[in-house]
Length: 183
Image (cartoon, rainbow, N blue to C red; front, side, top):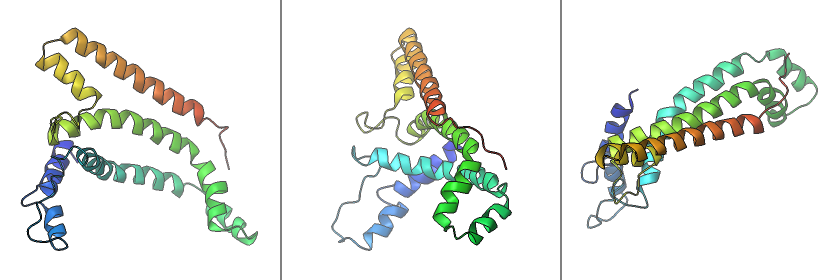
C-alpha cells in the first residue's frame, strides 16, 4: 500500500482523542488519565513510526522468505527427520543455508528502503515534530534544501546519505557473503 495511506491509517490509530490505540488503553486506565500522545511525545514518536514502518514492510519480506523456502526440497527435511534432526537443527542447517542468497538480498533491500521510507513516513505523519524528535537524514536534507534555500548544503547531505547507504549495503553484502549452496 501507499506510504501516505498507511501513514493516514496509523495517524488515525495514534490520534490522542479518538484513536483506536488510546480507546483500547482507556479500558485499562482511569477516566481522568490524559490520553497518550503517540506522535506528540518525544520519547514515543520514533517507536510509533517504527511500528508503522514494520507493519508496512512485513508482508513484502514474508512473501520473499516464503517463496524462497518453498523452493527447498521436502526430501531434505525427510532425510533429516529420519536421521533424528530436530526442527531447530533443520532450520539452521538446511533452510537457512539454502535461502541465504535471499536473506542477503532482503537485507540490502531493507537498508535502502528504511532510509527512504523513514523520510516518507516522517513527512506524512509528523513532519519532524515534536521539536525535531522524529527528524531523519533525508527530512533534514529536505528542510535545508527547500525550506532554508541552501540547495548546495542539501545536496551535500544527499550525497553523504547516498554514500552511507551504499557503503552500509556493501558492508552487509561483504559480511554475509558465503559460498552458494546447491542441492
